[in-house]
Length: 111
Image 1 (cartoon, helix red, strand yellow):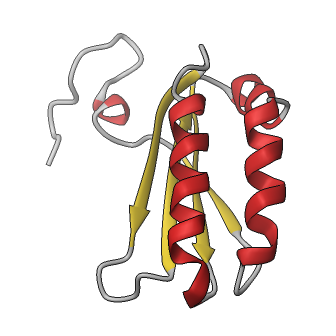
Image 2 (cartoon, rainbow, N blue to C red; image 1 turned 180 degrees about the vertical axis):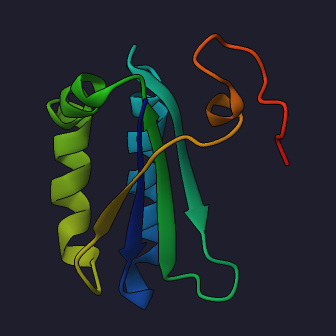
């Protein structure tokens, strides 16, 4: 599994156009066969900050996403809206999948 959280801060006057472009990109991304999850979160106490939660089947699916036309449109549309460069952070799945031993049974000492 390939998990990325993309942290984005946009200029305050760009919140609505960013949301519009990002919702469209997310909707199209969810149609990709390698996408497991693609969520758009807005920070409650600072509406200019977002996190895109992207979960792909594997690294190849993530690369395929970046080769789509809808991603290119999103990237080019939102680039001038950024207050700071976006930051993608990779994660690994620890639970529930990480709670399983190699044989697939639940770990006995799971907290």
